[in-house]
Length: 178
Image (cartoon, rainbow, N blue to C red; front, top):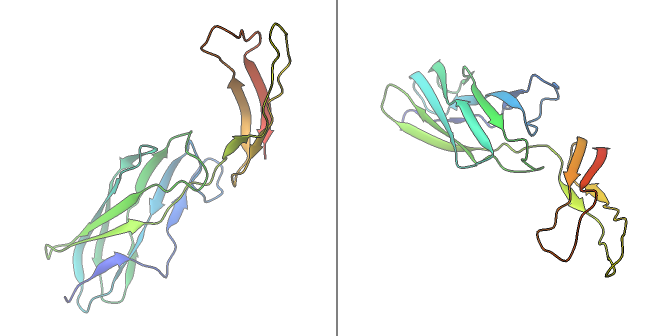
């Protein structure tokens, strides 16, 4: 066709995360993303609009539509932006499963996957505990963060749903784990 619109591979997706300003998508953030689109065709694409969707339960799209106006051949534009809210429990390198659907006045529809992941913590328990029958034991829980970002103010609760063990102090505080 004479018009072909898609994500511009030569320009980065702009991420405005406001809070900490690191330019990355982190768990618990409200972010605005601007996706550059390029006209790979030979005629101008008029009134370009895009809609963002996801199949992930860890992202809510607050503003799913962006306007791009007109895009000339072999040119690119940054749209008005999409707003996403990231679930605080999202882990490091989790794919947001975003898809952009692009339309213009010609009636054509183009779709593309949006390659964005979350940068966050990914916690694992590093030890086991053994408790003897009829004994009271202190249990130390070692946690390692294998993610790309620190986890701050980490708190946890230990619980057991059976009747052979009683947890006397169920709360744990680890602070920041890098």
